Length: 243
Image (cartoon, rainbow, N blue to C red):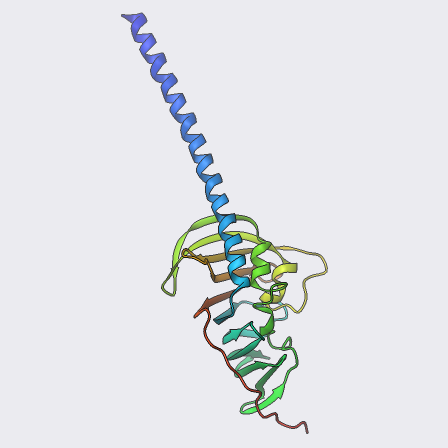
């Protein structure tokens, strides 16, 4: 009986070890599959964003973001056939903030930020925020998505009524600095944490992106997109003559 009892214990222990090993393998396999799904979804979203013609954009900045004066921007932006945008931005002016209207048309950003109700030409808009970069295939959202590193699925969330997959990753400042508001990337490239929320349904548009700006003061920039494909029109405003 003692021999049979020992054999039974040994058999049970072996089975337990086998199950434990199987469980570990399954866990690692599931983790690998999830990361693979993250990479696939990001690639699909990058392709989708290349084909986006327009969307409603809301950008918010929390903390001090280098070279970014805008604390909030809300605009309708079209990237094709030409960049056109209308909206408004809340801009940091010294210790105060001021809300200004924005129009982007024919390669120029016009705003009444200097004097409310009076429009001035701000060139490409870099001094406020360059709206033309958002849907630029080389420097905009599609490019940033294509170059995300080490993506990992962090669950599912509904953003403004759209079911999304939440993915954490990192991105080079060369790819996201302009979107975060910097006029140029740091001389030495850095990696910043990025989180993206991608629509679960095809074509898997980017619904939201958050860039965590590493530096002396931690800050973040969040961009939310909706109303994909909406019609956006704008006309050049009457410009106030220089004094």
